[in-house]
Image (cartoon, rainbow, N blue to C red):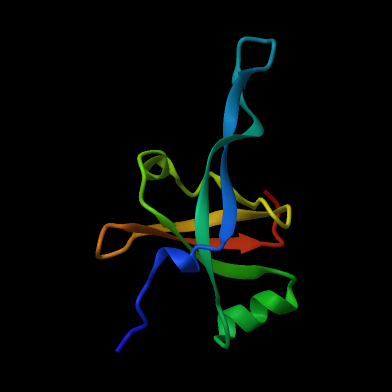
Amino acid sequence: MPAKFGAGQMIERVAFDRRAMVDDGYGNIVAGDFEEQFQARAKFIFATASETVMAGRLEGRQSIIVQIYMQDAAEAVGTDWQMRDVRRGKSYNVREVHEDRTRLLLELLVEGGVAT
């Protein structure tokens, strides 16, 4: 039987950032710096033992599955966003976004060690 999930497992604090669209001074709209959109409590599930994970580690990349509670702000998260681990100060690119089957959690595959 799968382990039960509870709020006590949400021990991490993460922030989600989206690039701001700014005027470059010549009338063009370009992507600017990342701006924080919201913060949430999260659970990290570290990927282990697959060939892809092992190859990524050799290249200095780290893949993590992150679970957060579904909320209005989280519905906008996409693969053009970044996630920051607030406690450790590390940034991760959002690679995939999935709503779990209960529709209570949002599961994100994030990757660290790559250019943002």
